[in-house]
Amino acid sequence: MTSISYSPPVDILLTLGEKYIRDPKWVDYVKGYEFTNEHIPQLIQMVIDQDLNWAMSDSHVRQ
Image (cartoon, rainbow, N blue to C red):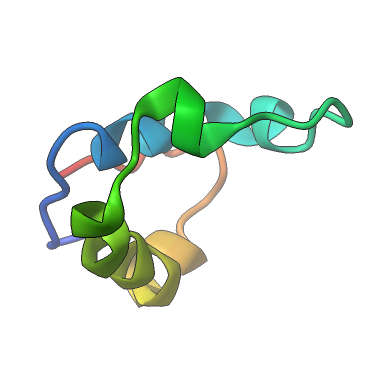
């Protein structure tokens, strides 16, 4: 479990699941989830979050 808390809309990425992420159809995350420049620090934090990156894909890691 990750000890870092993510706020909306960044936290929605934790619920998508591996199947959705590997979908060959391109998803416009910026438009679809209304990401803005203010979300960039949290998105970067999510990428480097070791607890999250090493979690089992079916563990439903949440804050």
